[in-house]
Length: 228
Ligand code: G3P
Ligand code: CA
Image (cartoon, rainbow, N blue to C red; front, side, top):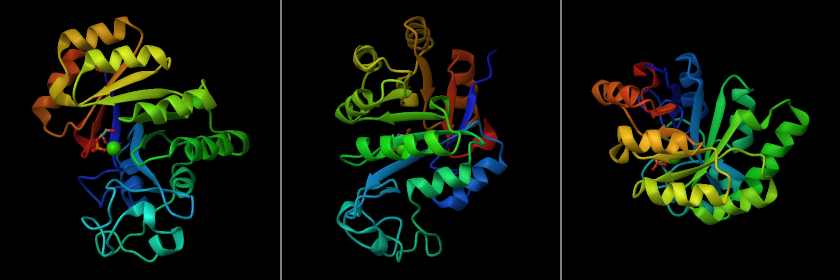
């Protein structure tokens, strides 16, 4: 049986508050092959690593992430103790020790993501193979493709593998990222035959992890990468 790559979801969400530098460090301690994080553009233009569109669930702040400047966001605490990191801080801490899957979660995140990624490729030895850029938003992926066709793009879907594959062809995608509930042995084979990697999420229970392994997926995104 092929061994899928281990990808920590939002760092190691099952261990430490999601999308924090501490969670990312924990994932690396657990020997992941990659880490997935979400990005939004804040009001002062920088990319911050955060999942929700609003601050309310995870922090002591309130309101939309995109309406706050970076200096405002830096005063806010995630889960009572952690800071909201910028994408650059995440790249610095990962320092090419594993792959980084950047999910373009917020609106208008493609251009600034390309800027950050290009800066790290030009100045810090990162290569296109060190990144996967994924999104549910086709428009953001198309923008990345227009800026740099060499970056590895991935289509997130929780609705249809067939639709994801159709779109994948138009942006020369590297992978499709289907929700685990969509994955079958047949559609994994089909996607791989068409030339795409299959990276599924979010798989936390050992029985489902095992089933995904027997289907031959290329990577699994998990809150508990230690179970992979
Ligand atoms: O990238 C996989 C997964 O993170 C997508 O869903 O809501 O956890 O960002 P979500
Ligand atoms: Ca995500």
